Picture 1 (cartoon, rainbow, N blue to C red):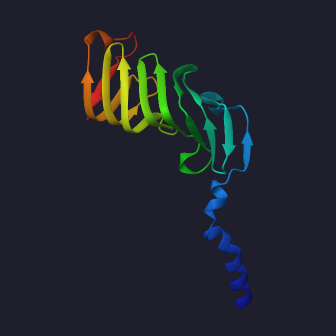
Picture 2: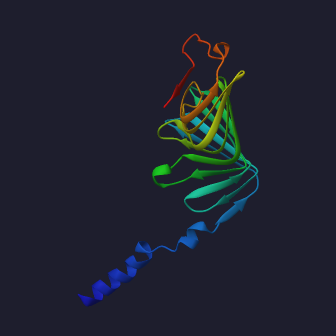
Picture 3: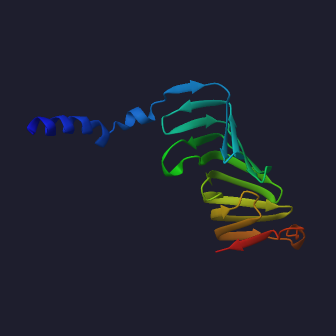
Length: 180
């Protein structure tokens, strides 16, 4: 019985106390990087970067370009200085962009320093300051949550200059601005 406990305990030690430096150490470095995510055969997003480094649970990408698709059409194109694709855990298939992040969709442009693509929820999230521009209208705030087309956006701590001409009604939807 004592032998089994000792054997089981030594087997569990690496699992219960992982060495985090192993996780952070890159396991593979590549030049040009490109990947895509599909669900049930439908393309959801693509990620392209200059170089990539694999870290076990995520891939780090330099100068990433992300295209998010809805119904087979690009809904937004995002660019940043650095990016991460999460490969496992609750963030699996989600993305994180940092450094001069710019997003361009049919309903506007987005500017921020940190942006998350929450794949499961299908939402963009910028925890810090973000600016959304539609035509001549600008909207500045924090904790931005938006759909990928920037058709629907919510933010806190709002400052904005809005012009009615920039909030036009489209045939199938109404572009809207919401604040909290």
